[in-house]
Each structure stands twice: as C-alpha cells, then as structure tokens.
Length: 458
Image (tube, rainbow, N blue to C red; front, side, top):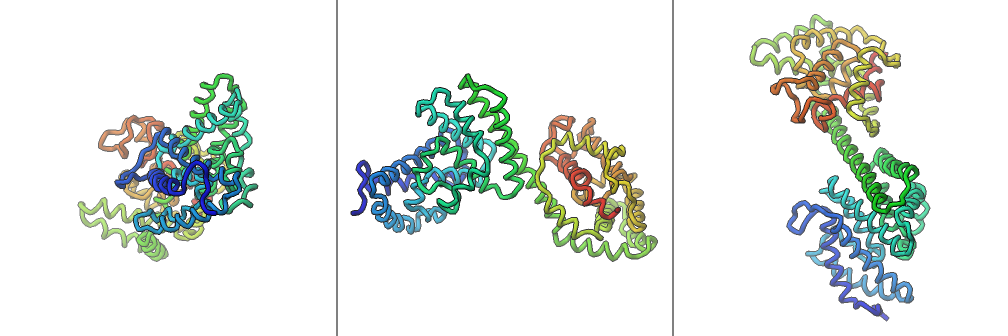
C-alpha cells in the first residue's frame, strides 16, 4: 500500500528529516560553520518539539494499523537519502524506528556534545523540566509541580532496567510507550545520564543529584508553583555543578596518570632503582657533579629530587599504579581536605601505618632529600604533585616542609611567589588551580588511600 498518512506526505516527511538532521548537528555541539554551539532552553525546546512531531506521525500510523507498510517505504527512501555524500555520516542510522523515538536521539546528541559546558547542560535540564511540567498541566492536573516531584520520587536506576526487552538501549519499544509516561523527557534524560556517563563514579554522581532532589521534595511543600519550579531549577543547577566537579576530577586523574605512566618517568624509575641499590656514600657521589655550576644548580636539584622521590616508591610501583587507577570520585571540599591534612600532620590520624618507619634505604633517601630541600623548599613546586604526594611519608620533615609551602599561598604570598591566578588568599577562592591540585594529591594519597604511601612503610 505504501505511505498512507492522512495529514502529511512522505515527501514532506523527507524534507523535514533534512531539517531535523540540522537540528541534531547543532545538538551535537557544532554550528554549520563548525564553531562551538551555545544553547538556550528555548532552543532545546524547539529541538524536542521537532522530535515530538515525528513521534506524533508514527503514533498516528500505528493507531491506523499502517505502520509496517509506511515505515518500509519511508526506510527505503531514507536509505537513499542517508547514502548521499553530503549527509552527515554520524546520522546515517536515521530510519523510521529512530524517528519513532526521536526525543531519545535529540537528548542523546545534547548530552554527548563535545562542546558540553555547564551552561549548555543547565539549558538542557531547564528545558526538559519545564516541558514535562507543562505536559502535566495540559493533562488537567491542578498541582503540576507536586505531580512532577512525585514522579521524580519514583525514579531510580532500577526502573530503567525493566524496559530492556523493548530494545537494547533500555528505552520504550515504541513512541506509544514513551507517550504513556508523563515524565517522557525527564525519563529519557536520566536514562541517558546513567548510560552515557562512563564510569561507576559518574553513575554515583547522578544518583546523588537525584537524591538531593528527592530530599528537597520531601522537606518542602509545592503549594506555590513558581516557587516549586525555582526549587527544581536550583537543585538541577547543583547537579550540574557536581558534574562539573567530576569532570575537573577526571582531568586531574588523567594528568596524574599521564606522569606516572610516561615513558620518561619509567626510565628515571629504572635508573633510580639501580642508583639506590648502592651504598649511600656512592649514590651521593653520583649527585655531586650535577651541582658543579651555579647556573644549573636549580635544574640539577629538581632532577635529583625527582630521582629520590621515584626511588622511594620504586619498590611498590605496580601496586601504586593499580590502586590509583581504581580510585573513584568522591567529592570533598578543598577546605575540608586542607583541614584534614593539617590534622594528619599534627598526629591525630588513627591509621597505624602512618606511625611505621621506612626501611634503612628509604631513611637515607628521605634524609638526603630533606637536607637538600630545607634551604630551597620552592623546588617542590617544580616537581609533579602526584610524585610528591606518593613519595613523602606523613608527619615527616618533608611533609611538613611541603605543607608549609602550600600554607604560604593562603597567607598573603608576594605576587612573585603566587603559584596560580586565583583572586584572593582564602582557600575558598581557589578552584581548579595548581594549589588545589596539590592538595587533592596529598589528600588522595594520605587520607583517602593512605596505603598508597604507607605500604612501603608498614
């Protein structure tokens, strides 16, 4: 029978598909010129309304009993359309089944955009929440915000695993099932969050964001619709901020691993193992020629300290890498990390491993490094943060020297001594800078996972 929709011809659908593809390209984070795209909530709503149009068309075809014939003819035309050299290769999968749940494609493209920023994510969240609340209002429910909150309360990761018999991505098998859910947009968005964020840490992050929203719903009444919507927006904004912190953590972790697994680091590690197997008197003689000229003294001291620190962790290198790679995201404010590190220095830690002493070889290396850095502590700023954190024992002289150098940054350090461009001296004024990176490394190795450093001492 072929195409048989009462209100729109197949040629019109094909023309609209071309425009829909442009929408998806924009949702993917790029404009037609290749520049990064910035979205507003209104633009996200327009994209979702395009998707709703296609879902309506295929919903009508199902209800008329002509879906199979119409979808077959349209798919044949779509094969020809998508095979064109000008058609975006990443969207060559476009078929009737895709258009039947077009909102999934739209939200997925927004979430997977390479240019994703906190602002763009906030626009997506705002559009999804407002459209779902508008949809609830249109159904005749008087207190739409309260109804939306109840629906959010029923959302958790287990409710998504029950629909996988529909298709392998865990979404409703048809637009009918998607329409049957008053929370269609939010449902798809949360499902894509859980699928798209690429680690157990990120899944935890989304659950935490939902948990925050649920707690607020339980504590607050939604009698005033405007107040309720603002509350939801605020909570979603907090979730966006938490995701931003997770992305910063991922960058920090990647930077640490980049140094630890670098070919140069491995070569120096091998050299340090050979050097420190010799008696102390012999390896000290190896370092003396490096200090022959005043001009190269600083550079030589940096290289010597790197050798010393790598020598301290060489014996448990493999376990250190393995344990650090298994480290998962757990957000702790920098101010709290800073306080905990000072408490550790003062001896309030309950970890018994912190009280053990290094072996004789480690003692000799620590003693030499401490004496070398006592008069030139600024050298520590020229060494990788992850190396220092992994190498120096807690409550050691080196730990005290290092923490004192960090303390200076919060107590009116001279402009020439500032190690970042953050404005203000308070710890809360520092974000994603070298200071917070070094505190994060110390906190990870000495508080969150003390066995990474203590294993060589215990």
